[in-house]
Length: 137
Image (tube, rainbow, N blue to C red; front, side, top):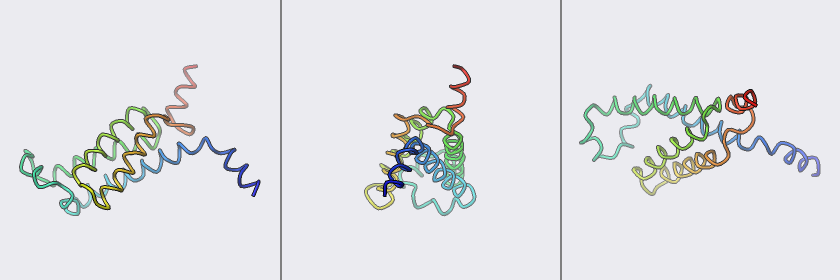
C-alpha cells in the first residue's frame, strides 16, 4: 500500500497533463466526427439557431468541428494553454446551456469544468508551453 501511495505522490505533477490531454482528445474526437459525419450532430443544434444562421447546418457543424480540432491540438501540445482553456470553457459552456439539463448537458458541464481547471493550472509538465517558458529563463 505504501508503494502505491509513494507512486501517486511522486507523480502528482502529471495530474494536469492527464486533464489537459483528456480534454484535448475529447475535443479532437468531437471535431473530427463533426467533419466526417455532420448529419449526426444536427439533433444537438437548437432549433432557434438554425433559423438565424446565414449558412447551412452542415457548414456550421463543419466550422465547429474545425474550431474544436484547433482547440484540441493546442491543448494536446500544451501551447497557450490558459488562453485556449478559457476559449474552450466558453465554447463548452455555451454548448452546455444550449443542450440543457440532461445527460449530454451534464457531461458537457464536466468538460467545461475541466477546461476551467486548466485556466488555473496551466499546461503542466510535458507541454510545449512549459518547454518554451524554460527556454526563456
